Amino acid sequence: EVQLLESGGGLVQAGGSLRLSCAVSGFTFSNYAMTWVRQAPGRGLEWVSFISGSGDNTYYADSVKGRFTISRDNSKNTLYLQMNSLRAEDTAVYYCANRFQYSSSWTSFDHWGQGTLVTVSS
Amino acid sequence: QSVLTQPPSVSAAPGQKVTISCSGSSSNTENNYVSWYQQLPGTAPKLLIYDNNKRPSGIPDRFSGSKSGTSATLGITGLQTGDEADYYCGTWDSSLSAGVFGGGTKLTVL
Image (cartoon, rainbow over all chains, first blue to last red; front, side, top):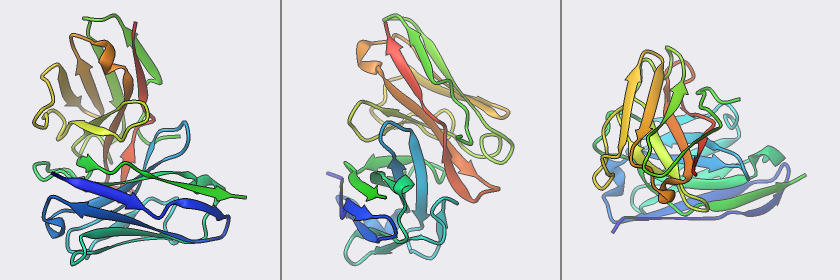
């Protein structure tokens, strides 16, 4: 059974840092590109970042570029999101998801975690 | 303001059909594959449609996707109360080198 389990969320002051983790099981982690998607309270989905299976290629939304860093440890089957210089508008539930293996698209994600809440106080 | 434009809400009666549009541009929907997600209240999104019109295993054929030009459409037939959810389109934007989602559409089954 495929499982993605996020952790690391919490309350942080504006300007602070957090590192989110996403522990994966049930598939060969290194074969799959991964993504972070967030959802502010009562708002829609916002794509945050994407990393290839090898970790060699990464992409970011303009809203987080230069502040957030996506990475992965394929030996630990874990995806990370280092978040620095946090702002109130970064408050959201953060989901990790894996790219769907049968899709030709970089934005088809078939397994999602339950999400972890990040709250940035100003 | 989302890069992809969806109607905020749609509604229809049980058993009826509804369509949800997703409008973009040449840098995203027109030249990249579109996916559709269903998000039930309090849950993570679920992939309904990928590569414009394909359904993952387990997704009923009541759900369909299509694309023409810069617009994509999600169709749902035989509406059920359990289909009440938020629906999102998503794709890659080649100009931004980033993923983008629509603002979401809330489906109400009256």
